[in-house]
Amino acid sequence: MRVHHSLLDTLRPPTGLRVLISAGATGIGASMARAFHDAGARIHLCDIDGAGLDRLGAELPGITTTLADAALARDVEAVFDDIANTLGGLDVLVNNVGIAGPTGPIEALGHADWERTVAVNLNSHFYFARRAVPLLKASPHSPCMIAMSSVAGRLGYPLRTPYASTKWAVVGMMKSLAIELGPHGVRANAILPGTVEGERMRGVIAARAAASGRSEKAMREEYLRKISLRRMVTADDISATALFLCSPAARNITGQAISVDGNMEYL
Image 1 (tube, rainbow, N blue to C red):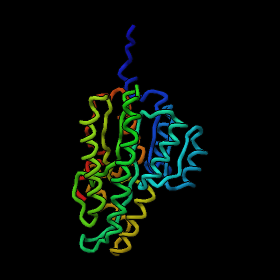
Image 2: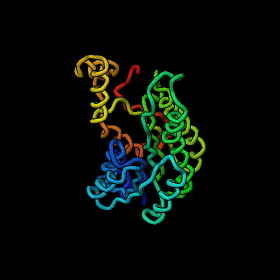
Image 3: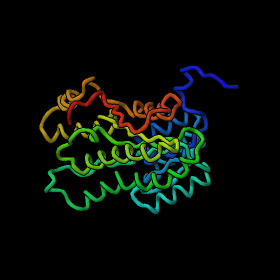
Image 4: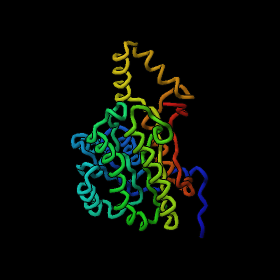
């Protein structure tokens, strides 16, 4: 007998999804961990921040964690060794890890800064994807891979070339994997956050205001003028999009670069 669910039911991810979130101890990663936990998922987190993992583990009973540097292939291997023991499989991979990288004109950037940005923001996504794909192919729950790109993955970003380059590359990876994995029923999408409200952004605004001799209020208004809705997004906005992408309502959404940015017009 076929059971017909209401449209509203399709907006909720299935209970019990096995979810891996990289860089899940703080920020957007922690917000997603809380959202998936509230939705009844089984969650494994990894992060380089051991204290952050401990705090979130105490807050969210039942989650499991691995201390790992996502830019190191051997650490990612250890994450999947742990997943075999904790989750016994995988339905959702959230490749969330990323760093800001250096700021400056291209001719002033050092090799080490470029290479570290690429290692964290791009190589890590490869390390996780190659290990996750066999598990996702075996999942019976409309498996999906979500990668965190950025509004800088659709716009040019002067003086932030390493960061923008990796974020564009993440979009290319997801669009390619959507084609490669579609016949296996695995979906792949990128989320492109805009300016995210929070302590980090407040610090950026304060620093730029001090450097330019302007008030923090004026600097914040300058940021908001770039956004059509004239407001920043929150980590929870990003998490809500991730939950939707794991729901039955999104079963035909793959290969997309989904901006959650209030329509950032330029950087």
